[in-house]
Length: 140
Image (tube, rainbow, N blue to C red):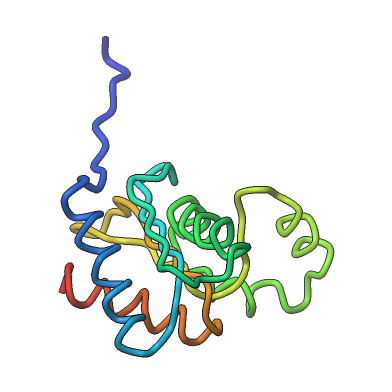
């Protein structure tokens, strides 16, 4: 077969460290969150929920991670991209696996997206800070 492709994807051990780093950062900030870490295709590898995190945020954290992996950019980038395209924003927002708010960040290895992290349960800016801090701690 000459049409095989090789893909890089995030491993389970790194995914666990990222989720734990996010929970640790949220705890230090006095926050309660949900965190999903997904592979290159946006499929969940690790999910952690802190006791007391708002229940609806579970789905939002998964959607943020899936969106960041699928579109290979932070979810916060959508705000500016869709500012003058409300019909596109409405269509994307209706998709069950997409989130257009900050807190989802792709995970890169040698310039390739290998997964993503999604954080939800705090304010958007706090979710973004927690995700970035987890990546900085684990990935560097």
